[in-house]
Image 1 (cartoon, rainbow, N blue to C red):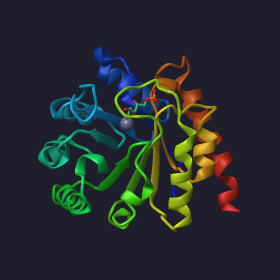
Image 2 (image 1 turned 30 degrees about the horizontal axis):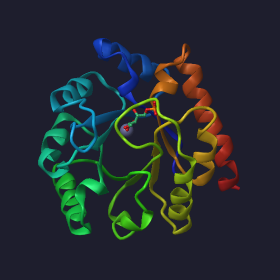
Image 3 (image 1 turned 135 degrees about the horizontal axis):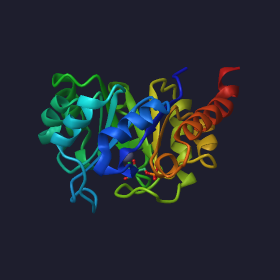
Length: 227
Ligand code: DX5
Ligand code: ZN
């Protein structure tokens, strides 16, 4: 069974103090650091470019989990790979065809990315990616429409996680959007093992207690899986 990993989304951190925020969340027990890259085209928001990812990589001790919400992941793959993405995830909706998904996966690997992920929007059926899931290390099931932090969790996407595990997928399943102490147990129970949380972590007064609480509730919810 894959370990439960907490990946705080830096989108909700104080960007004026990026290095301090990275250190603070790492000391509080973050497993990965989730970096939301938006291009103002695939999603109606514009965030972090390769130089900023590189700056984060220089101070980070935990792996960077880079979530590309961009229209042309192939064109930018070399930049984000070189900037220090450990996990690099693109959206199937941006790729379009399965053939293009395969081209992107190959390009990411050729650029030296250690873990390649494919993401699906809440209204994209799992069937869209089933033929390529064996070629990636991680499937990211979005539980909000991408673009902004602080949105409400959509429980209707949990069925995709369950269905993927039932088909025997044993690699990482990550969930992103609206995760907190109340919504995380259902994600874990369905089979999610990588939990992204932005506002729930950076909005908390005690980061360590919050991250430990999320990890403990994931372990409790996943316990029957182990039995
Ligand atoms: C949404 C991003 C998420 C977001 C999560 O487009 O991909 O990673 O930052 O934020 P919360 O946890 O606040 O929903
Ligand atoms: Zn994200």
